[in-house]
Length: 114
Image (tube, rainbow, N blue to C red; front, side):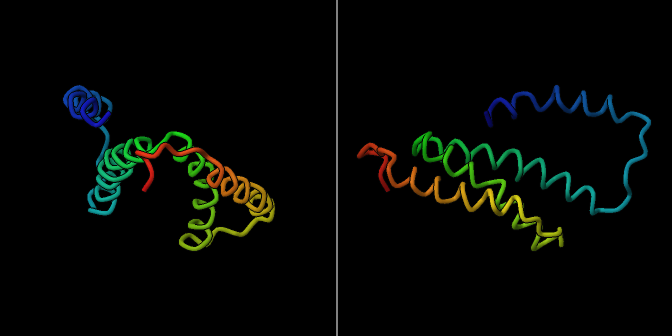
């Protein structure tokens, strides 16, 4: 996937330039840093990490992905001051033990064990 992104970069850049023609660009550095972070870390590096996790086992990676929304809620509460709603945490109280149980009982081939 990373190579596909690298090969598609010239075409994507042309489309980006065409769609932004005539748009006033932000003058401060903050939005540009955010765009660079999204492009390099959230997209490019995340592909590498995701496929690295998949190489260890699809079942394990998909089980951990079930916890991602709750991690997002927790970080939004801590970093952004979002209000704590009860329903997501009740769901987490059901999902987290299920994921832990599934991880404990998932067969892992000998060559993929840490």
